[in-house]
Image 1 (cartoon, rainbow, N blue to C red):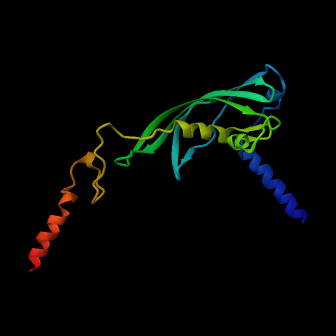
Image 2: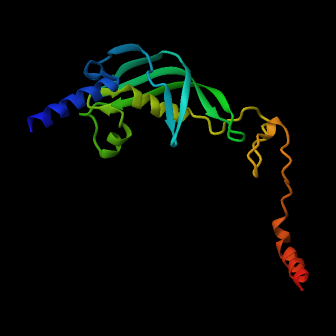
Length: 193
């Protein structure tokens, strides 16, 4: 039993070391308090919709914390990243620069009045900010809707998967008009007779 408790404590300590936490107690409790931090954004990959994208470049994460009222802190900051994301048409990897600028007000645990407010701040652990979870949610907001290797990307062949930007593949690309399907069925029925 004691061994299990020790293992739980050890796992908690290891887990806390992997999470970058910033204690904001002083900012929450001191009227007019301002604090600045310059941090290294540690992850080498960003996960989005079940996919992992490599982070090729990243700037330091600049953050400021300002007390804007009782139990309220305004978090501002910026981070510049270059993510490696596949082209939506041809699947070739594209380096996509992202400039993530954010400004968000958070509440102290004492100032939260309902479950919705608590759910919206899932990156807060008591008076501590989980920096990675917070920044990941801000990156999500800034993710591009569509990524193309070039504006005129031709995509891939629907039959063989060849990248059409590299030239034609020779597959038959004729697509019959679906409105003519009934006539085609009549012709096929007459062939069988």
